[in-house]
Length: 404
Image (tube, rainbow, N blue to C red):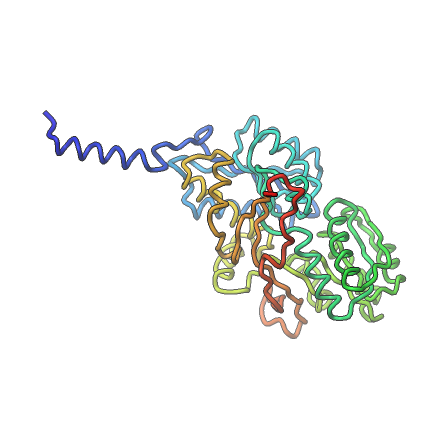
């Protein structure tokens, strides 16, 4: 016969067990599966690609490889920078492969296409290299999170600083897709608002092999500033071509509205020196960024871009939320991620806003001269740190998630 004291102990033990997340864990398919949807071999593969896969796997390994007693799996898809291929992979992953979370997703056109699939399938998506403001604005979704940046934060901040320094006439070389258009629009608004003039724009297709004619048109505009409204590979090629054509010697300056540390590495400091840009992450900012980045470097033999560092950050925060909620249910996990500050090696003063934009501090940096650089990948001078509430625009009421 069981004593009363034993019954009380057993009841307390059962209550403690049932109150823990593992006791009521609900993990679909008994695996937490993360899909890195990226560009593995094309123009965006250096700042995303294998490096984003490595960052996601590092987060899984650092977490311990399991959550709620279930294994964590990372799979990889190459969307080849084509929206239809990206959407097709996402649909198959969500429907057939039971993927719980898709991450990365360059470029904005692909990110917006995959967002539609995430909405339809009611599955979670976190983008890092999709920057279009429409993602968290008029197309915002409870299932889609933007983690690293948006075009407003980078373009507006860079344009403000350049105009303050006397760069009050602009001509844009704009990548002819959603991301480039968004960069140009946001920067142009700031330039004109501050009393400057936009003299025109040319719009080369993404990954144009010969950009000479576009750079020559920008040079002929006589604008003080040639705004580079696009990402890799065009941005680097435009800066390099501009240097070869004597843009800088002629008194004009190029402002990169988006440039990544891998772009600077590829260009070299003699060509890139003096560029102003904003970034969400710099590997050499402090001890925390250096510790993680050196571990990443040991695997990849290059320092991480802000997109690759952001993949690690978001995957780790996602897994912590799965553990806390006891489920991989996307809305419950997202709600948990909204509850807590996001403070890690990548994010300073971060928070997941109601429109599913992760707002955090940014930096204004200037590319060093060759003489200023003291060791490999020592590329940036940090000029200012910009609080997230200043770097990012307020939530837009056009987003249905924003309380009116």
